[in-house]
Length: 221
Image (cartoon, rainbow, N blue to C red):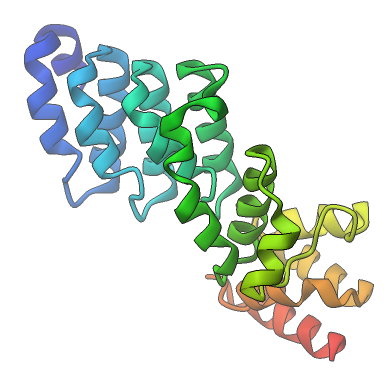
């Protein structure tokens, strides 16, 4: 990848875009980073095509590359990346949008994503729902009225305590021990609003975290 970046210049874009479809997540990630370094906007379409890659690190690198390219065509898909279940990806999308246009939320391209953002209020993942609610508020959409009409139940900012919010965030940390501790702690808090995120955590890749989340859910009943 480094050789292509240093020697190929614009000619390397086509090869790197092809690498974005490679079965290896490491190859896809390296290609995305290289395209960001090259700075050729002809790579935007190829990057956007894998902005929802199944691998979190690849998504983050793709978003970072789009931010470096600074092309407004990426605004709409980047807005949708603000709904990603992973906090790191959401932060990367926010940073990329700011690089492209500091007033991105006022652009027509950003507002094109609104229908999908509204649909995300019904998503089964707690963090996607919360991100959608926050984003709609940024767009000055009356989220409460929207939830009333769609029968969507969300925990608004005024609801959860700071401690709850901390544990809820840690429940999806990369560190398995932190996720485990958060699941146990949420069960002890006995806040009914934790049901949705604990349900998501009950499908964690780690067995102990899954069991802790299930135990916490039982404590909330």
